[in-house]
Length: 486
Image (tube, rainbow, N blue to C red):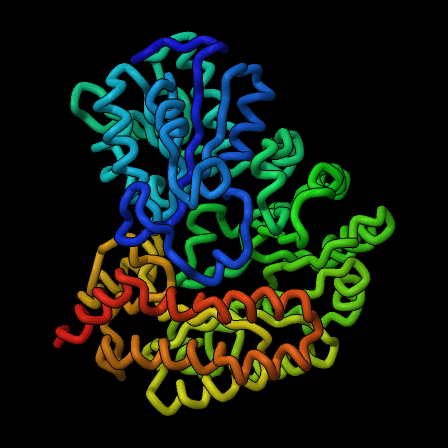
């Protein structure tokens, strides 16, 4: 394996979702695309490598560094001339990421390809057919140790935790790396954002914790980040917020459960207000039980965190029980009502089509979301690789497709209990179109607690955003496939 020096060229790439998972294909349209967020991992890793003294590191996301969401000739030249190509991927972007790795190895056989992220972690064998090394789980400490070893003794990787690689045609998996401690998280360098990213994102992001104490069967968070809820220090977070103060028009907290430790969250929010770091509208992912904590709600409002993304999943108790959700329908309905009275923007994440759902329950759900939510995502319950739910659906032979580019939460990928797959997809599409109809969008605009957020989604819908998402070429092909499933 190539021996590196601190002057070696290192390129980190995170590709966007594309139609049919094609490298440099047309970028897929979804609700996420209405908010231009920084990449999930490469900015953090670039910060780590720069802090370690690597002199020639470059991150590339074609949304910000390419043209119309596609890699340019200059991007490709930088990538293929690199000594190390680092790829971060989720399942949805794995096809194009693997294609890039394969082309890189054909053009630069001596170059090293390192892959990491949720998908390489759980589908390691598939990735090792195309890349040299997989970093499994949290990568900040592993990549630091790995790059140093590639400089000193690239043939000796066995004692580095959290790796998988091929040696003499055999797959070697080293000991799993323990989750980073809170002390280690607080010592990580802050993410590095270059000029292009700083100028083009519409939302800055900050991570204040990792993990989630809940253990929902369908969710990949506990598989990747663990159930132990690890929090970063308030001083570390405040420093991070200062660094991104002039990035974007909104602030998104990337924590999967921002208020799992409500006392600490209240302290953080108060410090944000005190330091005047509350000028941008904040959006956070929380659970419905935040509605039961008046002090937390007050602190959220004072810190200008007005948008709450909540995994409601269902207002059917049988469906919630089936997917192992720790809340019941009554808690969801009551909690949303309380948050509405407090004038929060409520973005509901729903999972229609569970075994407890019927055409009638989804009709009721559609009526409820139209009356109670400011925005919604409808995720037909899907089998994310690495989760217990995926394993159960595999055993029950209910998975309809392993076309990974469809694993975006918008497509029916399982054989449902009380619908045909085609009926469920058509029902979900109809629920989407009804919620984001011009008539309903105008109603929400008039009554919205945040005109700014409503206008973003209204504009997205006005320019055919929802229709593009539901009826893009790949979605139409999948709908045709579902129609022929018995």
